[in-house]
Image (cartoon, rainbow, N blue to C red):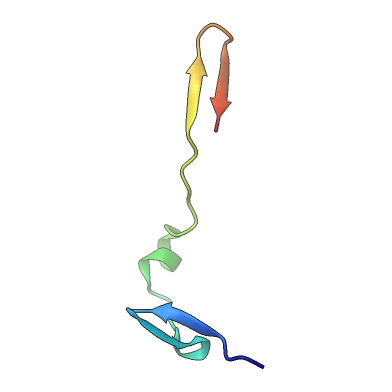
Length: 51
């Protein structure tokens, strides 16, 4: 079975070696889970159009 790899700190490493601290900002504050969604309000229709 092929070895699983990850890009971690600028290198390709075995997936077992790609570890982050539990104090990492993205885990501690959840900053890695948000995505942006664009929307435009249409005054004529009174609707929000989300892309």
